Length: 266
Image (tube, rainbow, N blue to C red; front, side, top):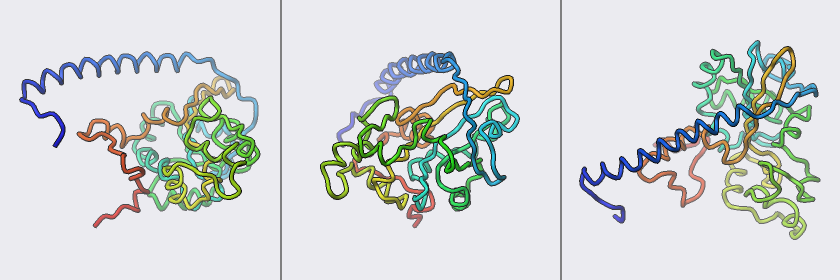
């Protein structure tokens, strides 16, 4: 054992120091939340259409009579055999959250480019009940920077999380693609996630995770906020618990999570 061992008094002194840091982080988090809410609203004039289990809907329809809409951009491309395991781990917490959002004037929907029938089949497999819409027939995913074309990937012009390059998934684009006549070299975490989704790794990374918020006022839809990559950490429920566990996220061995019905329960 290499971790420090101490008395209860030593622990309490250290814990009080940590408490001060935690309170400072909480106050800073409140300040950042206020900054999010002060962002200017951008009018959405394009008509986006979706396929849902209740038929075709527009973006305005997804509000379901509420004034706010939260969208989780779930990585599930048309050629995936299953939803991204990382997105699935995040989505495992949605069932319990959605009912509270809906009763606080906030609608929710996951959105993916896979066909609606494939989404509903996977949703049933996972035991999920939250709304999930297919954007396969439109530009929604592309316009909100969570889906990219083969040409963007080939040219290395993908801009994700408000920047070009710098993300693990970008290892499959641009010079990496041009330098290899076969599959590009990608981080193991990407390859493992692609395998769990049953997707070709190069196609897998043309989809990205994110979350976007919208508001409906006087019949007009406005885009208010989007976040991507590590900006989704706060929505990943298991990480909030692991960050408080003795060994933290403990991911030195790489990808350990699975679709929740794929763990060895023996």
